[in-house]
Image (cartoon, rainbow, N blue to C red; front, side, top):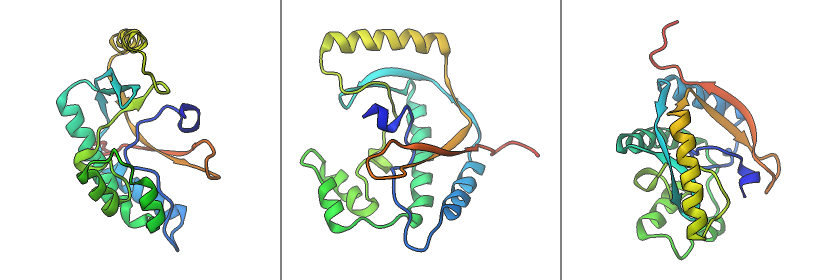
Length: 181
């Protein structure tokens, strides 16, 4: 799984462009979003998250800030999204989804958006052994202490050239708000 997605932090769930839309439409929309966000640093800490070891915001305001950015991205990019077919929606409607997550899936095509969004950067494949979880979290905590906050200075767009192939970096767009020309 990690080999397919690479190391990343998702701000907006993957989607296919709607009919009649081009990559240029997507690029323009993401550039406008990036122009509205100032670069920032995010303190992170390792945690066991949904069965994986992941870096998550270390402070509550980091979760709030990333949630705000994700909400803006979702709302700006949603009009570009090809709607899911009813069968695609039902395939994503798994038994473990809460009622709220099911509502978000129906409305937005993904269950972990808006108030259900939790920013994370996955570091491992699934890990279940408690000793392994503790060891990995301890090791990653030392790295976080050594490296400090993660700089966020761009948004990256990834493409999946063919279904089930690894995501590939298409472009990076600098965050520009507050930067004078």
